[in-house]
Image 1 (cartoon, protein in one colour):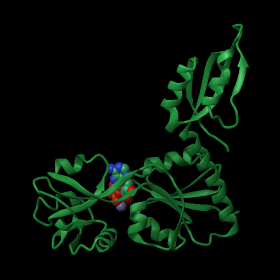
Image 2 (image 1 turned 180 degrees about the vertical axis):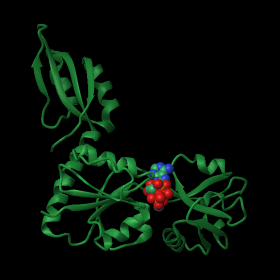
Image 3 (image 1 turned 30 degrees about the vertical axis):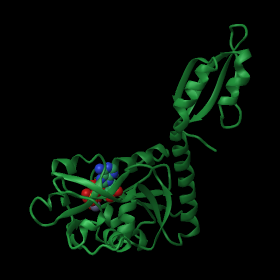
Image 4 (image 1 turned 45 degrees about the horizontal axis):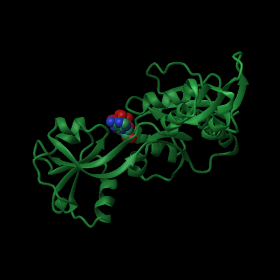
Length: 285
Ligand code: ATP
Ligand code: ZN
């Protein structure tokens, strides 16, 4: 039986999250130990450890069938590969930054200026769309030092908290794109490999769904149940179990992480007591 080959980043900001995702999907494999390739013991998949920038090319050339990369790398390398699923981790943004003492007003500042970046394709498109004529200087790493050493007037780089920019005397002035990790696949996977991919996707979605939701348990007097049920959406309708205490019930349901605090407040106001909220490991829908 054929195996699906997945390429993930060998070491960097995507590595740990990518490995965790596979583990949460119940896929077991020996610890890489610096190896280039390892094989899962309980799922038909091989894991290739590569530099993230190389992954799109390997997937396009079908050396790997699927891969996990940042959207920024996907767009920058512009390879013929498909995005299968957004994974919700390693979120960051690609931004333009200038020395903090610059009186920046708008994008026209960059007309005729030199901008250092590791993302020349994305930046070129962005400037073109906004009718800016700037000179793009490609640097493969440590872009944030470019203005300080006189190589450029500004930079376009990945930002998450902004602390790297600040410590290099820069300020963020424009957002060029948002990025998160995505699962990509080569085009036209054969039938068997596609079936393995669908199995993997089913697991990934169950893991993601579980993270977006919480299991909630609470106690309430029976005369308040109708009101409380209206507040709780649940997967279908909530489970209600009688408590040993006369006239009281225990209610179990699932609530979305995003509406969590609002729902809890409403439940309390409606008379719910002893509210417990627990994480869900997998959620099959
Ligand atoms: P490699 O050696 O594999 O080429 P790299 O130095 O190019 O690694 P990393 O810094 O590990 O890359 O970043 C990998 C990806 O993680 C980026 O392309 C981006 O999508 C995401 N990323 C980068 N910086 C951050 C950050 N500060 N927070 C969250 N995600 C980030
Ligand atoms: Zn890289």
